[in-house]
Length: 591
Image (tube, rainbow, N blue to C red; front, side):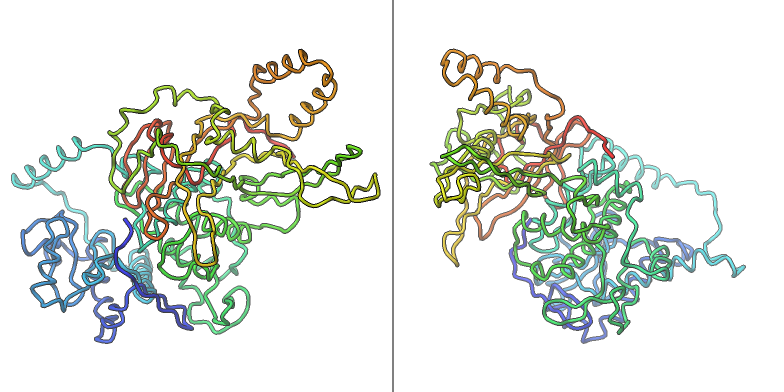
């Protein structure tokens, strides 16, 4: 959920980014030293480097539970649970002085004053250094002294056996959640970062991106050989590499628009780590702070913790991945972004005097469609009205939605109608110079899809800039299909239909037959796409929230930050889509 508190962003020349002003207060009182001690304790316990008799497992000091989302107070040795709100009790008992606590399982910092999880680059560096030192300790074979305790057979006591049976029954009887299927994992909100989480979920369930990064196809071009060796030792972060370097070479630092040196990042490597963590089988939600921090370094526009536009983040992320994954500026770029999302639009300008037509082709990675300026369709309200899971509220859902091949084009509030308007000839306001007439003439302009991408993203323009300071949200329900045939919107189809219409223009009966034959023609599988992800914006423009729906193993899921819940295709189709992602059903391989 979106945080209700306003967080503070601090940036200095060392690229230290903090999301909470209270962290700086904690640091001023030997906070870094205390945090380092806590991290060493956590990873020593998790790796069993010390006998458990000497280092017992943490438990809530209020209720003695071991599994209630334990948090370690960063000011003292107190451990309390989040589940029964004992963490807040300790905060009150200390007169609000002990405001920071560390989640033992997720290793995230919780600020009781901000009432949210927060992030700090210096603390993150300490965590990564502790991880690296622990890995070296475990793998150091040159020292004959064993670093792990020897394996011992363990026979649970009667009390431990009852505890295991009790908790095993709870797990087996629980409903499907984000950790039950590999590849389904919630993403923690870092403070108004639901816009990022919704886009990342669409990336994670994009088959082409998934196969590319999980197949280790990305070869980082930003690192030297030494950097690569360091990255091999640390699977979680490449930000420690040359972190203290003052070199201005492109391999080490980059200069932002404010003239501040920043650690060089590679969004391709961050995507690698994102996929590795989400598909690792871990049961707890993942915190994508490395990816977010890298986006800050790549684009200053997203620095801060204010709500951002998901579409702008989508485009910025693709540009970053393109530039960091071997992308070129030429028309024939074969990077993963253009191989996945890249297509071409043909623009044809026709002279109304002599019918001469000139055409140009332009690349695209998504299609922005205008929403008709009509009153909202009150008969089809969105079923997603808040951040809660309302998957049971589908009583009024049309049962035929699941079998839709295309929307009714008579409904102007549909994706099909938006595409028809997008590809319909429009008369230009100003006269266009016709090379055939050798003079300016009235003309029309028509767009069509010359080359279709493997994955096509439709951006429904729900945010309208009224004035320089005012932006309104268009909340109109737009019907969209689960399967769409794009053939009618291609250049080939438009050209063929125009030729047939000209040929039969004098015979009205033949024109009607032509219209019917176009409608009844057999579907060409090369142009058929299937919906696999939807991003929605819920609420008002100034305090809204982003969620996404993704298709995983033929089942739809709702992704609301750290919470993932199963849903139905009917529920997805009745939502007010903002970004719609379709995958081509038949792939063609060309050289």
